[in-house]
Amino acid sequence: MRAALLYTIISAENKLLIEAAKARGLELERLADGELQLELTEPHTDYDAILQRSSSYARTLYTSFWFEQAGAFVCNPYRAHQLCGDKFLASTLLAKAGIPTPKTYGAFSPESATQAAAHLSFPLVTKPVFGSWARMVHKIQSREALEAELENREEMGHAFQKVYYLQEHIDKPGRDIRAFVVGNECIAAIYRNSTEKSGWITNTGRGGTASKCEVSDELGDLAVRAANVFGEGIYGVDMMESANGLVVHEVNHTTEFRNSVAPTGVDIPGRMIEYFVSAAKR
Amino acid sequence: MPESECPECAGHITPRPNLEVGEILACPDCGAKLEVKSVSPLLLQKAPNVDEDWGE
Image (cartoon, each protein chain N blue to C red):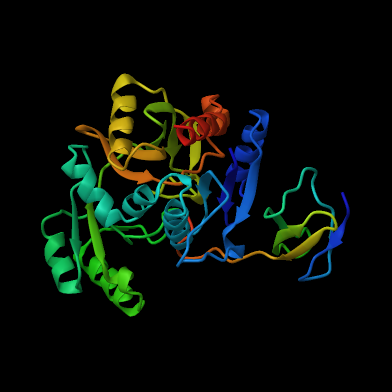
């Protein structure tokens, strides 16, 4: 099998995946998305399988689509990236599948967004529909703060910044949970703990810290069910502990794990590579 | 592993072992983020900026 890791930069995760593949006898070739020239009118490739690890969402979408059209197995598939990467779509599908998720509204003008906020109480959370690492994820404490947020977003110019996503704020206990799903199994989970540096955000890239979270039957089952909404693959399922139990607020399609191997003791990159190889050979 | 100089400040870069093309280094002198374009010879260029759509 000829397989490649598709990347924008060789991040810590990508290096761990390359090493894990090598340890299992798989030479994962490197394919830099910035160097690709893809013939759209005749997609063809010598690769049998692509491990999609691009940092850019736009490049992820287009390269996943193109390599699938060229006949390669792509992990995760295009559809998973398309649906998980758009919070508007993802929240809709999670709720429709019966996955507990925070109450969320979408709106397309400041006026309708303000009216939608009336269905949620303050504080509420606004997020861009595309984006990661908690960028521009804001906890909105009042109507005045919401109006300021909406005015800023209207001035940004990008059409997708004017798609308003307003979500119920969950009063979580200073932490949330990232569960790693590989195929149909939840292999590990961490708590992402807020710190003074990260504020109310828990993202480890923003100063949150990782610690081991035991994978209970309830947690593992919910993580797999949430991941399966987007099709079998490799996911990071983010959950919060609410007063009414676990709620899933996001499913990550190109999950990071550099801070999760040590606290969990699980060979996350190794498990990902083993799944990638077995799924590609099906 | 060959050494190189920072394309931003000409500072001296001693690469860590097992470097890969595509990895990002930080210049110890100016802090610039540098992308490894070639390992042997070691070629570095300013790393791409983190774009709005980067993430997981």
